[in-house]
Image (cartoon, rainbow, N blue to C red):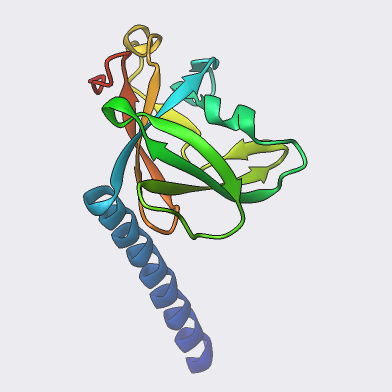
Length: 158
């Protein structure tokens, strides 16, 4: 191995590790500082034989987005008990007082907000079948991360 090859390999390894570390820090910050939002779930299929038990998530707010829409922001306001209520769609990040944005995009024909599957321990599917909300943490840029699933009362299912 030449000296240059080793240097290039080391630099690439360092860059991958820095990117991974930055990504983890970004998600942890979002979980710690993001605003809690409950999004009402739409019916889904809760099993995957290849991946184990999980729930493919679909959100009722997606019904408000036309099929021709590729990406943008869903503007919501917090209703009773932290439940998000749809306000409008927009392309920019500007919001009025009391509103939040959630970034969405169309990926392979399916709408996504980055929180599309919820994996759980094998054999525990029964307790998640009655989940009515996805609990997300959302930041001011519209990034979101799924924290868990909640029952009809907005309580986290554990």
